[in-house]
Amino acid sequence: MKDFLSTIFAVVKAFFQWIVVSTLGCLAIPVAIGLIYFLFITIVGESKTFIIVEKTTFVEEKVKEDDLRIKEIWDTGEAFILNNSGKTIFLNEVKYGGSSSNKNYKIKASSNIQVLKKDPYYIFREPPSSIRVKSGNSRTRWHLKR
Image (cartoon, rainbow, N blue to C red; front, side, top):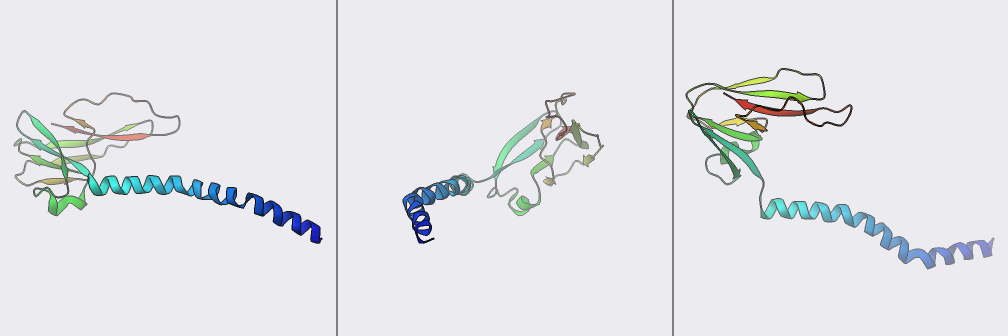
């Protein structure tokens, strides 16, 4: 029994450095990815979409949290819109690869910036009738239309 324990101890001692390095190596990858993401968000900053709609045109901007126009409402939505068109516009759900539901939101003309809970993927252009989706999965996109 003493020889058996001595052999086990000798094997563990011989491979201890390899065991420690491989274990730390496995942990190092997710930690490094998280650190890179944190530094990117901290240095570059997160951006969101801000859409300014006029009667016949629109401007799409990427804004950051310190933009004075949206600073107070930054945490409340994924995107922001200023509808200066004088007409109601619509944000419609487009679902691919699953059962469709008809979620539609009205965005009335206003001089105030409004919060969008969903970031529009198709802005004043028709979405395709289908996109590539893995079997059994679904994907939802949002369509902003006049």
